[in-house]
Amino acid sequence: MRKDLLRLLALAALGTAAAPLAGGCNDVVGVDFGAMHAAGADGGNASDAPVGTGDDGPGVLPDGGPLPEGAACTPRSCATQGFTCGTQNDGCGNALDCGTCSTGQACKDAQCACVPKTCPELGITCGTTNDGCGGALDCGTCSGANEQCSSGKCQCAPQSCSAQSAACGTVSDGCGGTYECGTCADAGAGPNCSAGACGPNPCTPKTCGAGDCGTKSDGCGGTLTCGSCTAPQTCGGGGTANVCGCAPTTCAALGKNCGSVPDGCGGSLSCGSCTAPQSCAGAGTGNVCGCTPTTCSALGATCGAPADGCGGALSCGSCTGYDSCGGGGVTGACGCTPIDCLDLICGGPNGCGGTCPHTPDCGCFVAGTAITMADGTTEPIEDVHAGEIVRAYDPSSRTFVTTPVLEAMVHDPAASADGIVVVNGTLRMTTNHPVFVDGRRVRADQLQVGSGLMLHAPGLGLAAGVRDTVRSLELEPGGVTTYDLRVGAPGTYVAGGVVVWIKA
Image (cartoon, rainbow, N blue to C red; front, top):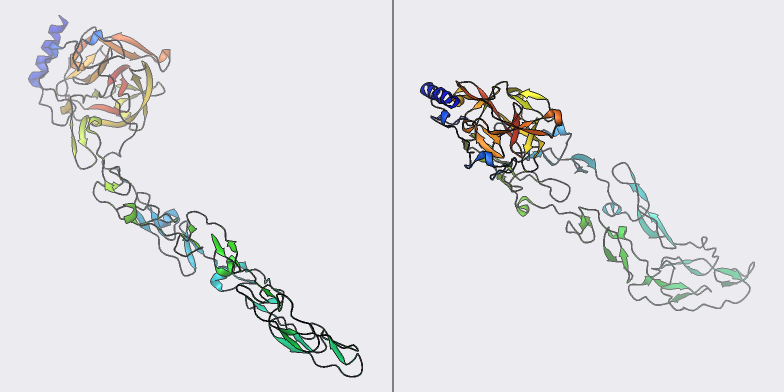
């Protein structure tokens, strides 16, 4: 008797309903509602399959996806990000020119800052001077015995007769020259000059010793010529006058700050290491820390503002239309990855200028249908929004889990032209919305009295479920606005307390 009544209602509805519009949620034309049977959407006997073990299994949606059609990234300016220089990112993958710094300044972390000078840059090898940024620069001290710092340079300071307490004879000035300190008178200390001092005894002239060089006093008022030195030694070069020697240079004096360099005396100097991203000779100058920025071409980038490898950013261009930088899955290249049409079962723009058709799984619910949220409370389906979390049934674990709402869809009255199926007097949906029936996906118009349903049972805990059956089926006139949700894995949610399936 009930099946005959349902057949009459279906025939009446088909006689008056308008054809569904393309792209709506109901693509079934002329459904013989009275011919509903127990087979699932994939065929077979729905009632024979145990709960959660359907052959086709649940579909899996990604946890996230591209922005909905029409959504756009809002670029940020240099000022709003506090940038004052360099090429920076506008927050949407495009380059942003924030200007250049004045002479004497460099761009660091998107801010102009004074760059202190170094001793080699200033040509200074000793003493303290201004670094050009208001700080003091210590350029070291002079190492030679007779050296003194004059105008930032180490220079030999000649030692006068009085400085050496020499009263007579010819004495070395310590810088390769000599001083004439006079002769001794017959009276007083004595007529003879010895080691720069007058006395009564005859003077015994000194001779050149091993390693002596240049012209030096013989200690008796005369001079000695002691020859020359073999490179890299020089006369007085080790800091002792008229003695062959070599004073090693310094890294600072050579203007080097990394690696190993000759010290000028046959040895080597260790000038330290560089801090990344700089490397030794990285900018092309030997033993000087530096960094040579890469290029867009070298990176194979045609858009965006990738790092230049030296702490800055490159400007590699921007994208147009539906393309975004990296949008096609290739870093630094313009492209667009369309939304999988399997995820847009009700059709619509695919995000890259194309359109996805609707599928037979695009069903809908009437306004007021209670959707079970993650915390067990319910909200009318028309009030549920993308980003909210709802309860879902996972057939693989046979437990209730949570899943995000990826899209809330609204369909015009033409989508329900074939009528509204009423299950057990409460749940109202279009004829083609899939329901979870003993582990299979069964369309609403294929249900029959006795079909197994899975209900959410909050009273037994948020993860608990209970099996129920279809006790009554009715067909009401359609032509009303309907709603549906696109959710993440496992592709189910709870409508009116009943587990429904949005996609395979």
